[in-house]
Image 1 (tube, rainbow, N blue to C red):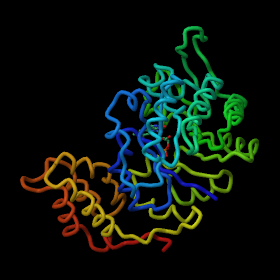
Image 2 (tube, rainbow, N blue to C red; image 1 turned 120 degrees about the vertical axis):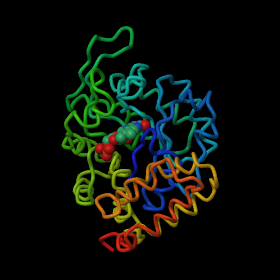
Image 3 (tube, helix red, strand yellow; image 1 turned 45 degrees about the vertical axis):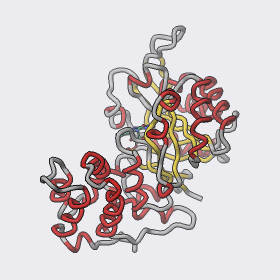
Length: 341
Ligand SMILES: Cc1cc2nc3c(=O)[nH]c(=O)nc-3n(C[C@H](O)[C@H](O)[C@H](O)COP(=O)(O)O)c2cc1C
């Protein structure tokens, strides 16, 4: 049984974007943005953790490095009924790795194992781990070596083995190493080469684990090819660059099929959604800002983007903008349906 998921992406996969994704794909697992354990403990929990039941199934991604704190965060989040709790061991950002969070934790498999064990104590839901195939960079723990390179297949295999021994059954592997010094997070998503073969090898070495691959996967053909080797595919940037692709991904998931929905119907779904924000322009804009790719590579793409980009004409709110889009965008593109249908 294969799985498709939409990756955790800070500033993208908020509730609005997840609602939009759910109009497009009924079966994919939708991830939250990464939320730190300390934000869950000290921040505005409702704002951080609330979601619309329409978004389900949904996975919460937590980042952190303090076992007790992470355990506490999982305990708090349990009341929200997420379908999965994911631990972030893949984020290369300085803010995160500088605090020994995210990808830097790949250097400490035993510590990650302890964290995951503590998470599992607080939830009945699956605890999964998202990580890279390796790291190259300075490590900030006081007694660590000045530069640590863990980018061999054997390092990756060891990491997965240690976590599997504490009962992690599902791994999401971004098929690049993270370079922890000298590259921005954005560069870290493009510059280290993709090494899919190593993720495939992990599946061969651990046939009983659920292995999901991530990184640079942008077409239905690519998804199909990866699913011959591994159990799941996680889609990141393509979800906002070309969201209409998501109408086709449910065919890979048990009981799923291509979602026979047109752009017009998606926009109508968005009209229902933004209605709840009424004359709150800021919320209305936030609800739509990550839908800009809906007409990717189609006539009308520029018009759609121009309509959505502020400033909006005086007196127009999100619902009006969408209704205007239905009036002026090309009919054939609005009524187009997924190709396999
Ligand atoms: C804007 C943006 C924000 C991201 N934020 C997170 C995050 O919060 N947690 C995480 O694990 N990965 C994050 N990522 C990485 C993605 O989850 C994914 O691993 C990466 O983009 C590679 O997949 P892709 O090539 O399909 O985009 C982010 C990526 C982008 C583009």
